[in-house]
Length: 411
Image 1: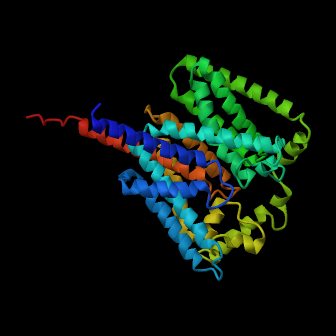
Image 2 (image 1 turned 90 degrees about the vertical axis):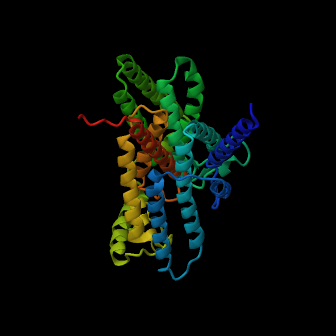
Image 3 (image 1 turned 60 degrees about the vertical axis):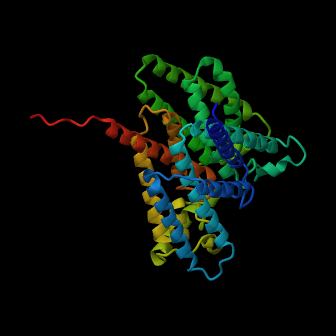
């Protein structure tokens, strides 16, 4: 091979490995800033110096995320004591740039989609094993991977750990439904580990997210295919998977302590939801407060006033980022859902990855109505993957228009 080709291959290998390492680190967020932030900040800076290309189709993502963070900076001016607010906003701005970064690199190199999802699966399996080991006290000190007697893996909160596992679980489910029969055992093992991690997180949101993502994924595959045999396979495998899942849950519930925790967490409403100043009461208080403070009250201030944070991404946006941040985030959410849905079932090489990212993103946004998802790393990764596909489709359509022959007017 010519030296230029060797260098190009080597650069591609190094850049791909660098992104894979970043995705692997995303499963280990015990404190802020986490190793993921430090590593990815350096990677984004290096990539920007050596030619990070932002497609025109990705500009709305960049502008809306920057506008949201400007709203946070304005809200910070309303605070008497800044405390750790600058660090919080720095992490917010970094996560915004990380979404733009992932959108940019995947729009230029679609092959990165597969690598990103494989690395995500590896990271999810590793942190799931830590969470499961912690829950069962598998080794001395393993309890550090639990919180509130629930599996948390290498995360601060089981309510973040569980949802983090949903996208790779959805991807493995996709491979299981569409792949060859011979590969099923290889896919079933990591899927079972991730599913167990989701279960032992005892996060109602994660349970619901995984269920919704699985249903949406199955429905999309059913609608997309014109093959009767494939549709029959999807139906049969879905029934088999549900049967195995029910059997597995029944077996797990026989373990000491699991049944009690499951019964407690399975209730739709908890005591901290319906108390006088519980989660639902704080929603009403917060939205009334937003009308009085259009610039917001500053990041993390709401929790210091009422004892608990907002636990709602829309209220969080109003309090921490003001009306500017709220409108920006709402616009970005609607734009992402609409633009992603428009290209969701088109036959493209990157369509499987868009499908998995899209259904998981919908689950995260739905869950955001009941919990704060502002600093969830995987949410910004999903945003980047969806917008990368939007940019790829934009470029694909542009190439089709340029290749279309110009009609000669009839004389």
